[in-house]
Length: 322
Ligand code: 8YV
Image (cartoon, rainbow, N blue to C red; front, side, top):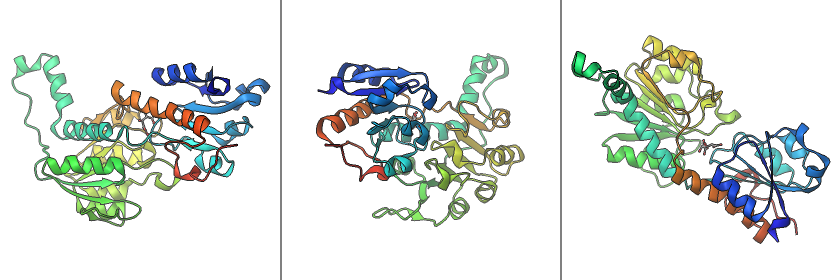
């Protein structure tokens, strides 16, 4: 009887997910994932967490009956999955259901960045078309560009398919070459950046990718270079990126993610050759509902059948309690 199982929802959660959890389980909400907010009553009964935001080791430790953290999103760098794996706690994420949406966003952001469509629309809305004549011819174009993808997982490959359809060449860097992919592989981000003029990062967050896109990578990309990021802001040295945009080390950048969201460095807001989005990669009702369903499907499957739908690799070995 799943209605006797308590699921804790710390912080905001997608409304469709919350509605389904509330219907099936006992759902308890709290403001944020702060261990100080865990009462003895909660500690005695919470067996699952559904979370849009971060869950650290201290929060997991405060909940001794915790079996599963169902995280909303494919990237789960804000959940301490390594700790969970050692503590016999399952962690699930929401892969696949957002792949095509995020790839669409990457292409939209790339085109906006290169062809200046947001700036051209502002020009129209400000009444300048009628007063001053046509918007300027854009110095940028996708024509003839060579694309490089940093992080060739499911989303990277969906972006690659789109780039091919647009007539661009595709190369990539990944921890390892991906079996069965015909695109050129480069062993480091710098090698990839040197070989292309359009770098699209899909890298996940975490310590191993921190500031992977640094001043050296941007210099290698060069003065016609376009950088697009729809992975995680932590993977970019934002000071180096703002400087590179200011001084012409690269041509332009399109960013959907930032190191300290929702705070965006003023230095990036100040440069006209950056196209900036408020982390909307997967943010359609359609795709967020599909992600929400997968969060709840993971909880229902874990407590109903003893196995998750989409375990993260760090916790793939974790078994359900009897
Ligand atoms: C979510 C994302 O907005 O899936 C991801 O990794 O970045 C987005 O789809 C985010 O994860 C919500 O926590």
